[in-house]
Image (tube, rainbow, N blue to C red; front, side, top):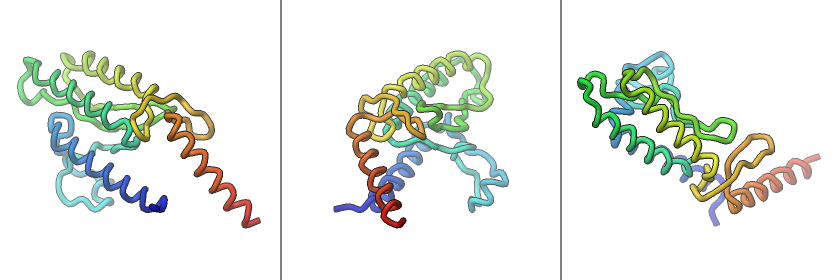
Length: 171
């Protein structure tokens, strides 16, 4: 049986691989950018496509993000803007108060309202989508507010119970 550490390691590798796929698949959303001091501290030595503030959400929302990124790319391609303005640079994707948040940088005014409407739609869908597995879910309060399906909630509760028992047995 896999340990939780094995699961987390595999999960992180999958997450990293999927993010890299996003960078490659959607270059108009993840253009290469010059390194800042934080990038240099992280060890980057050449321009990166990683968003300024990165990804801080679980893989269950990656299909939502993929659909959003596809729509944003289509919006860019259908615009009549010159190439230099055909960008919607994603700065951050994260979970906040149980929902997905997607922030983008400077965008041409012709794209802004439509891009924001697409982001709003994806953010709204996240409140009914399990962040861990992508199945239908609901907000689960208790410390960190997250959207989980029943199965992921049960797994979370079992894990928390085991962790609490470990600490109680040390006393």
